[in-house]
Image (tube, protein in one colour):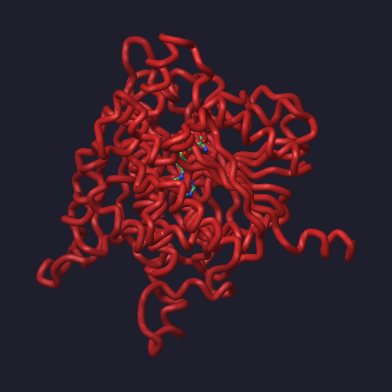
Length: 488
Ligand code: SAH
């Protein structure tokens, strides 16, 4: 199986820069071994005007059979034969996608130290895949690639050119052309969409495939008109994984819409009042209250769940008593900003060992969240639809079970005091609900009861005699902590 990637040169850049971007020298033919055979990279043409890189995967059919994964498609009756007679060696499939990500891993991530400005810029690209299994036909091929900015040619391949009467095979010759995409984007499209079109993965799809899909789909999959089909096929139609991925994609999309469109009213109000009397912004007061409560709890290893752009993580790192700080968010975009804010790439080794950021959805249990002293949910719960909230409650209080959990959320009663907030409006476009003090207390008490925690409450911001404080905070402490300490 085979694909080629071509580019043309411009006055400023020779086409052979493609070699830098792919991290493969145009003058050399190179070989890489993969679990299913040998991948060859070579350049059929390479000069200043045109440069073409070819990736050829020579599939080791014996290795495929040994691993029992060469079945291709076909029901049980012919499975034995299908192990030996199948399209795997010839057609672009998940095997080619895996080889692509292995051989061009830096290019896929857009990393190019030699030509960083080239890696970040769109370039004229032509990609050809001579035999692409296209389940769904040429129309589906177009529906998948066209929304991403590709001009698509998908010509059906005749079953046998000697016998035109036999009609077309289910393979197409695919040519993609664009001047709008970076090489990394192009490779990530192929990495996801080749196996989607083949619709038969050569390996068992486990839950880490969801992470792979979201990573490779970053920037183009959320909001793709065929998002559902792509997700479901990529995950081998495993329903629970598909649902999980769809949910996370939706949250990413919302978070992005949120970031770009809605300036938080919360912040707008703060800015305005700041001009008058320069009070400490509410967000800062919130972080101070959280830090004080964490210090009082004696926590050393802390989770910031829904960490957003990492402001609290940054504050926590300034205090050495917090030996490990983990920021988790569903939004890749927020995490990217957080990592820039923290200068993670330039951090010294010791400091870097204290901090982790990772993507995850709080609507699902996650073993990575187990074993911490404390977890913070600062202004997060109101971003979940109410019916999804019990899932977060279980994931945090039932599954991760840190000793201390701090939850803050707006107090809706206070909204009448925000002069710029129209009556009946929530403070932020993405808030699914805002609670009164009573509602928050009832919710907190129910959780405490259900999961074995004690709960107390604290105001954040000026505690208005009538309507209470702008932010309300619940401090949960696990009941069995003392028993555990004795046992240990
Ligand atoms: N904790 C920060 C950010 C609050 S904004 C602060 O106090 O300033 C809410 C954050 O929760 C957003 O970054 C959003 O991406 C994240 N979020 C929303 N739903 C989530 C979910 N299901 N899992 C993880 N993070 C989520």
